[in-house]
Length: 262
Length: 299
Image (cartoon, rainbow over all chains, first blue to last red; front, side):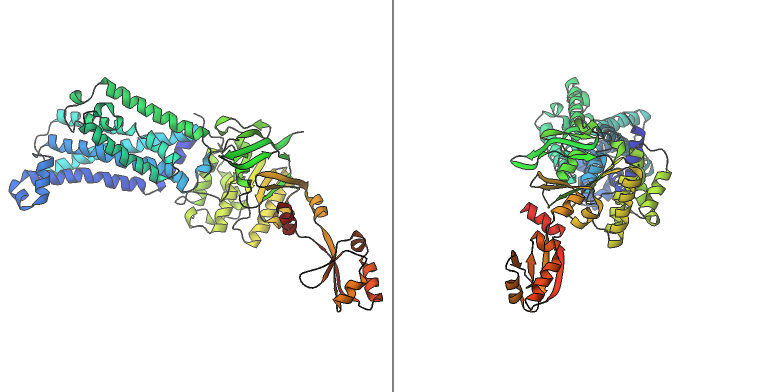
């Protein structure tokens, strides 16, 4: 892609200068912190009883205080919270060009539009994957500080695959958020789309069609509702890859051909 | 002949609305072309089509001898533009915003950013966040981005917007020097008629999507109607003395004569009035101003 390094530099500069990376990291850091809090409560049942509702919620969600439960909680939060937080990142990267009226400055340039869009997707992937790594790493730190029982290297490796794999599957569906932010020329339509897909994913999973619905697949992969071999099949991975490619192609096509009037 | 801009039957329809309707533009190389029109006349739609931002419903656009292709492909390294209001990333500094443009234009020399900031008198704001600039300086930033790569063709939509009177003169002189000294072609839209009149070599007037008039600036001078305006102490007597002419009473009570004989020989009118015993206290040839001419054309 012509001028890709310049376009990447530009997109990274925009990200670096904004407060969005800080707030997304801050938002995601809540996940291990809440997990750590639940572990503290579960480690001491007497104290948990005296804490009322919070401990009851902790019992319901996690059950026992061990690394398996802790990683499960993080995996669930990344699967569902990631879909929302990563969508915010994507909606910001694409939607801001319309909110700040800068989209028109990206169109008649020697750097092709496809290069600029490609750079945006690369930054989104790098940013959201880094966030996922951060949550996993921060989770390990919190877990060690809380001194959760049941640690093993194998367990950590499995959790790494579950959490990061689920994050990657969430990330590859982000082109649809980019497409909706572009077509809707702003952030709000993309947020609406995200809420819709999160809700639909829940319905598809509950009705047993989750393995066929792209937006249910990341959560099923995370192992949050059971071993993924029983939840997903080869068709699930084919579907999510196809959906990703359709989203990417549609976004590039839109930027190439749509009338830019804003 | 080679043109910097050439459109053939350029049309853009939005449903039943014909935003631009069969516009044939020819802008010569090195020319300053003023594109006039009321709000909603089709100026910005035309400009967006010239920049490949919208696809024509009919017709085609050729810019610097290149037909604009699918995906907005065009000779953009040689074209600078400012479409509607300027835009910049508010959390980035003036310098960073221009550096973004420099990189996306593939310009290696970082000094181009300093040079263009000096040219547009915004060097002192280099480290100021764009979001905190006054509207006038924001406009200058937009113009700086358009001029950054020393383009052969400048397409500017309302370049004087938000500038103070001194800024308007400064930008006008800058654009004139670019055209005269460097041969830059300038296509600028505006609704500030006097500004266009002072800058443009040729003027196109678009109304309801159609190019209704295209003429040289000198020809525009000729077309604007003239009249001899007469004031006297006794206007009724003066009117009687001029009964051989087509005299109209003006709103301010004076008389106006559009007759060529009167305009060419006002002293003859003065003699007539003196002989009738009502010597003129005001006798002047007044030319229809640009606004009046424009409104006459578009109504």
